[in-house]
Image (cartoon, rainbow, N blue to C red):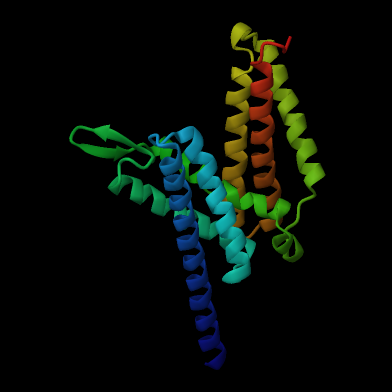
Length: 229
């Protein structure tokens, strides 16, 4: 009976710490996005909002590991809750970007957009196993050079596919589309595996997804520059 009581208390404590971390992530994301809007003085731009959401999730997770004592798997759960909160908030506050489309006199959910929003919005937690010493000490801790090498190889494959397709003046666009899709799939699988407690594989695949996206965007920019043959 005592053991069961302690187990229940531990579960309640864990849920509380995850919720607190989710609230922290949610607050940081709103602060970053609104601060950007205040400073720049422009309307929300999804190109800028997405990196801010990822940054807020990553920073919130890093703080949560240190302050609320959540483990990395729990930061993934907190990130999912915080992004669900953002989706609800964007429904209440239409000026905030979210996966909603006009539907007559109301807004209706864009199911595909919602899935992408959830996947990309939670991707910030995959920076932690790659770069955060506190997370890497407790595990998982993928080797950054191996992740980068795999991401670089996949980037070369997407560039080759782009070249073989022969997109002409739009050379680089196929690279961006294919690479971004692969990155989102890897991050989505990583999130699911993290929630299933397969943390080592989850951190590897999710980390590969975010590093691949960085390489893909860089390749797209280089391929689109006038000096690139």
